[in-house]
Image 1 (cartoon, rainbow, N blue to C red):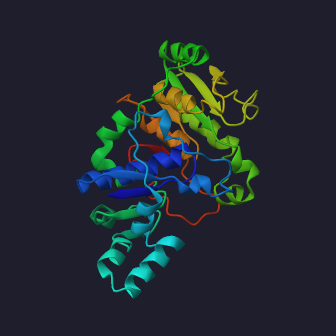
Image 2 (cartoon, rainbow, N blue to C red):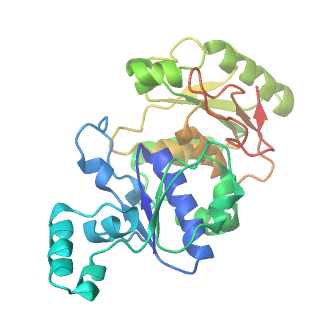
Image 3 (cartoon, rainbow, N blue to C red):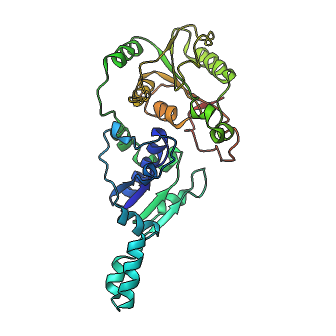
Length: 301
């Protein structure tokens, strides 16, 4: 059994699931999800979010989590001591740890990840395609959207499919309002988007429509004069935020933010001739390696 400790929003959960699935398939074992993070109180309003995909999820029990990550519950630990005191070693062993916890060693990919054994509990973001590349085709199948589009989303889908299109993601929200994220990740400046739009137009011409997505509906109004044709997409509510990722993936090309959400929107884009532009500096303050965050074929500016 491989257990993935899920954390963060939808994009982060997708990375955590993808890496764990790759390891589970490599070890010919089952994957279970540890969603305890979302029940521990202050998690910035995050919830388990993978139900929007065609993922058949199995959830780890508290006992299974304790057995792999080395943390027995108080009752289990007490019972184990009682069994040992009574000379019932075999019963005590049933309550013992029979796996290992693995905490992500570094932000960049490390090949040793693929050599982790069965019965491993995983903790980390694993934000690189290299952690899950062996099962990329399986993930493209599983990360298809479970729920049908509502009528407003269908309208934008039809527009996107009617001509050349570029998705532009402007991530603000907690990047602007959360002090830690503001210092560590940071909101990208408008210059990045202006530069990316100019580069995109030089590569694909001036006929494409730029579809603008953001978690802040006011952040892009009236400031995107560098794009000759633009549509501000406002049909995706908090309840169906996954539709924004779906629409990004339907565009021909992508300009992403320093965000796992738009990263996946670009990765799920099935256009074999797509151009993806990503920020060269992913983190404002965090001292994480940025070497493996984006696939090599994406353009970082």
